Amino acid sequence: MSVEIRTVTDIHQIGQAHWDKCAGTDNPFVSFGFLSAMEDSGSTTAQTGWQPFHLVAEDDAGAVIGIVPLYVKGHSYGEYVFDWAWAEAYERAGGRYYPKLQSAVPFSPVPGPRLLVANDHPAPDQIRQTLIRGLAMLPEKLGMATLHVTFCKRAESELMEQAGFLTRTGMQYHWHNRDYQNFDDFLAALNSRKRKNLRKERKQVLEAGYSFRALRGDDLKAEHWDRFYHFYHDTSDRKWGQAYLTRDFFDLLHERMRDRTVLVCAYNDDEMVAGALNLIGSKTLYGRNWGTIDRTPLLHFETCYYQAIDIAIEHGLETVEAGAQGEHKIQRGYEPVLTHSAHFIADPGLKRAVAQFLRQERDHIDQDRDFLLSEHTPYRRQEK
Image (cartoon, rainbow, N blue to C red; front, side):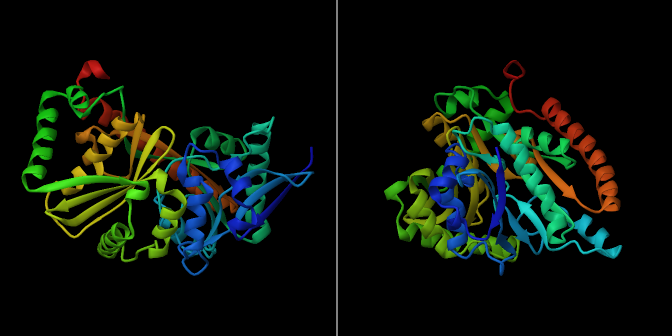
């Protein structure tokens, strides 16, 4: 079988039917609906430093059999797998680190597949290997120093390691549903001190006069998105200095994915004062952006973490992924899990230096995770 590899700078050049046949339905962040909303809204463009450059594999009949969501990056913002030190060291040595190539979900540290293969292809592993070879050829062809595949599946990173990529691990905090029927079932799995603390936190928020609504589908109106965008913009300005997503993105997300979108809205009296955006996968609730105009303590925990657990239990979902960072999540039932990425570095000197760094970093992350699981778990020991 002959396979042709090409790149496209517009997701519509591939089309929704071909894209979603490869992306599947498990993870909404690699769907055509989500990534096309990014492009069509002007959130991912050459001007924002996220130029679409998707890799496509086609068979000899011209059918799309594999895709890698890919971007040309002019910086390292919005990635959550940090390579600033690599860029600085390489440029001090006279190299040119940017532009680089990045396979990722823009602006979101969400784990998921990056080597997308048509769901009816008889040899999916063969196509993944072809996609990897295609990725590895791009830096030299384009005169770039590096290519990065971030928050990919572990099996994908292992395949890329066999092809000469360097692999990197990170850590996030995910909540796991152990067949809980309600929030009290989850609380019963915690040790006494943590159980009392969570009950106290939820009670304090409710007694302060806050109420919550989880809006989905046609229950979401333009007024909710207007308000949420205001929160999102305010939070982005304070924390990062830049709001990556445009207002149009949220309209397109609603148009294309409102049945897979849950917006948790926090109210004080009749005023919406905070919101948390979640997307629903086949087994996972993905908590993403949050924002507020209210600095009340504990409002963030309730809006983002506890409401997400309620939603996951209600819908029978196995996991809540609440984004990057935050050891404080452990005390609220979220457990440390490893994330994976793979990095192709063309320059031999830079590759050696990064490989040494990654070995040391991996040892530290493994030690930290083991320590957190053994010494800081909020769960009763018999639950582990």
